[in-house]
Amino acid sequence: MATTASIEILDLRHFAAPVLRQVLEAEGELWKQRLHWDYRTSARLLMQYLDSHMLPGYAAVENGQVTGYVFCVYEETKAVIGDVFALPGPAVLTVGSPLPEPFAAGEMSVSAREAPPSAHQIEETLLTHLFETLLNSPQLDRIESQLLLHPSGTHACLFRQAGFQVYRRLFMVQPLQGHFNLPRVELPGDLELRPWRDEDLSPAGRLISDAYRDHPDSEINDQYRSVHGSQRFLHNIVRYAGCGTFSPQVSHVVAERRSRDLVALCWARGSPRSAATSPRSAFIPATAAVAWPACCSLWLPSTSCARESAKSP
Image 1 (cartoon, rainbow, N blue to C red):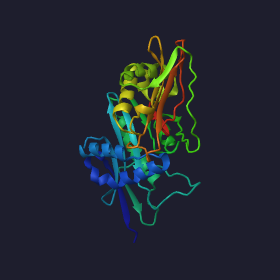
Image 2: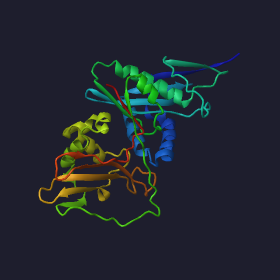
Image 3: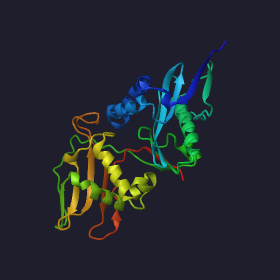
Image 4: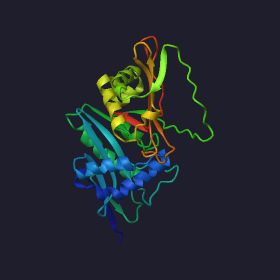
């Protein structure tokens, strides 16, 4: 007689951090392998929210053990889907196998004669539940997501089916061993390159807002559309360790000598004691510039940490 294993999808706020420790540790290993990042700082912050039982989302539970989770955060009338992850199980789809449809019910029953759900299935089931919650929340007018860990397109079909616009993003890596060159700066005489200063935060917000106007990044993240939103984005990079610790010693701006206005910036994260996987790893979250001396804007591509981004209309 075949036995049945049951996977339940439950409110994430029912669970404290220790229950998800195994899942977060497994996810941290993937961050190290795929993105060369140490996920421990982000995991500690996430566990603090879990212990407060206030983090919106869902957990996949099998035989009393959490095997996956998805969460979001609310910013006024916007929701941001922060992450989705499920433990890889024994049933791994082979290359070329069709991806099964996600389960829509709150409980998945799997016969012992059948292959158990894959991590991809569980992730899509978790996302489906979160979509249903967010899309039926009258206080929300926008949903965003940048699923950093997942290869581009992993859950794109599911997002599109839910009405999201999907933008392809790439994470770029450059090994530097054997590639060191002395920096060479060639700027017009009216401009100067200098290290980042704390007082640059507000003018940098204005620069980001100008540089990203009408760019796809402002469609993905609406913070880029206003000076206030851009300043909040930059403040989070400077003050909070996420993809790494802000490194002012290797972050620079280009300023006009006479007016002291910023016309370009390049930020870096990662330091010997930060969230890079080794002391020799760093991350460039943003580069931006405005055309000088004209007033039109110019966007410079950055090494974005987003693998897949989506938003609702």
